[in-house]
Amino acid sequence: MGIVIVLPVVLPEAHGAEVEGSARAQREVAATRAREGRSGRRPADHRVLVQSANVFVEPPQVAFDSRILLVRHRRSIPFADAADVARGTVLVPTQKEDAEVLRYGLIAGTVSVAEVVAWADRVIAAEAAPGGTLLDVAMAGRMLPADVAGLLKGLPGDADRIRVMRRVLWGMLQALRQDPDRGEDIAGTLYRLATGGDLPSAAFGSDPFGLDDAFELARKGHYGTRTDAIEGLRTYLEQHAEPPPE
Image 1 (tube, rainbow, N blue to C red):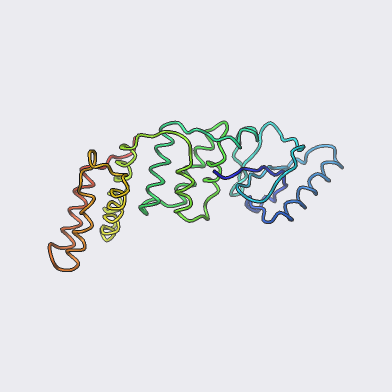
Image 2: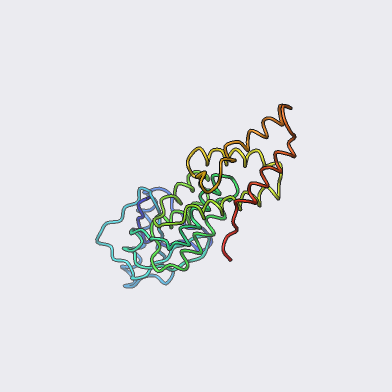
């Protein structure tokens, strides 16, 4: 989990919520304090930026308002005290299940980083005190899918492993229906998940260990056709996939 550090800065309305470099951050903090000292109050447009896992460190004597704002994409999402932000938010079971489905979807290439960020925004908007890692996810729009998957894995909470994987297979099924040419990649992902222990044979059978072989055999002209391989994959996914709850 990244360390969440809160900086009081004044952000222009026309820009996003990033502040680059400790020197610049120090200057903005100093300027903010100077303005506050002259006016005797906090500026009306004062915002608090949450920057994760960076070099910015604010002296401990700084007092924060009882509520702070996460500034992203020219908008503000309210959440609770700064002290609560540093503590992890334990997701309720349905949220942790969603997080795991998204994580595996990133691995499988059936979910985009933008979809994950949008989900994190929705969770944050509903939480009284979202934790640091969840905020990291919400600000991960420019990160690689593998890195975002790592953040999702670090979110605390419990989820039904079998139900998670059935929903992951549902995402694969939808991707296959939209683009059958992705079949071989999906079959390869199933093989890797099975060998990694994520698709226990008691619940998902042994087919994931061989579905990718059908594509290779067809490609080499040894047995069957690519259409046969796609149909076999589709049949397997339809048997074991489960749609998300409505």
